[in-house]
Length: 114
Length: 111
Image (cartoon, chains in turn yellow, brown):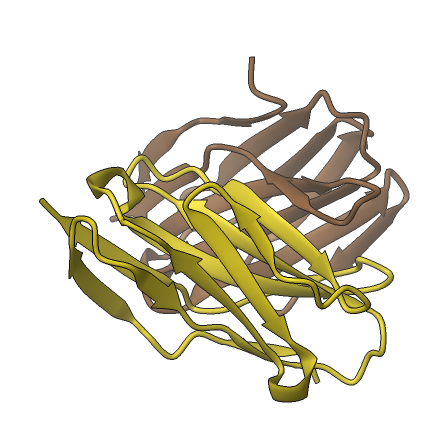
């Protein structure tokens, strides 16, 4: 069975703090893809990153970084020096190699206070 | 213009009414999806389609139907809306790289 767990329902930080959003996944597939999406208050879903199961390199994009660890089935997302504009709901998602379905976590709401 | 367009963006309808949510895309993708989002539940798959002749039920298809009129168009219908279908609905396409491209969402309220 495929499953994505985001245990943190809501996180509040003060601007400039670093924050890590956790994502744990379950899959029996050997080839799979992991994603992070951002949903700002306006409601749209914005693609942030895709990672395939064969690439465990961490990735950094500006203030964003992602830590993929197959040994713990985790794909965590860190925002460094958070800003108010980072306030959003963040979703982690999983799909298998055939891309038939996406499995979404329940989301983590991040509140960044000035 | 958005690559994936949903209409309407907001809709209030009465219990028992039929309503159609429309989705069109300009990305040229074959795969299209309808999801609903409820607070604390993430996105759940309603229906998905791999081409015009291939339509599949998702995890919560009861009470919904779909029509794939063309590669670019995929509509979702609620034949007889009920209040627990109040949610935010998203249409999405899937690219070759696997990532989903979402429409801006339709906020549906059934009263």
